[in-house]
Length: 218
Image 1 (cartoon, rainbow, N blue to C red):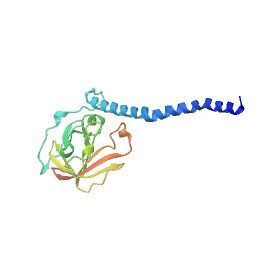
Image 2: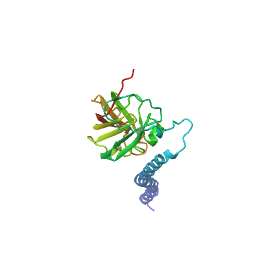
Image 3: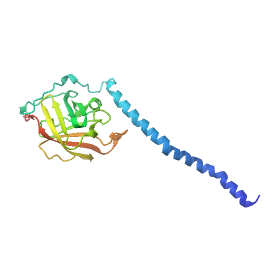
């Protein structure tokens, strides 16, 4: 056998060692990895749906739905409420977007697995920005349907409020408010698995149209 033929056969003998791994890598990229991502998203969604039925640990804040008594008053000045952590204090909705959820006092993992959490520094009816945070895999699932110009309705224990969505943005910082009273909804940017680990958030800023005013703190 000639030397040239031996070299050619030797070349073909080593070829499978390179082509076989490449085929497996290609199949992984095309089939296995996308399938894993799909299954991961399904699993995360199932876990979030199941979480409300999980037993609370001794360190968890207990939620109290009985603390909520809707007040539909939308004008005038009212006494400042004194809610406790875990109290249901409001219901938030947007008819145009098919969006509705319960709002609890305090934004934490317990309140956000059953509804949304209102930050404790500024309440609805205070001067400033009232912030409500939620998770897209839970109560904020339909938040992506909200558009600029839509109306957000917030019915609390101390009065009713209507806000008009003025700006929707994503980033690491919320948009600047231009009104004396505003409502800011905050959630993760994206509805895929582990989106809450992204650096960016989705912000929906809405300006007050009607609602009661809280008495100033003394």
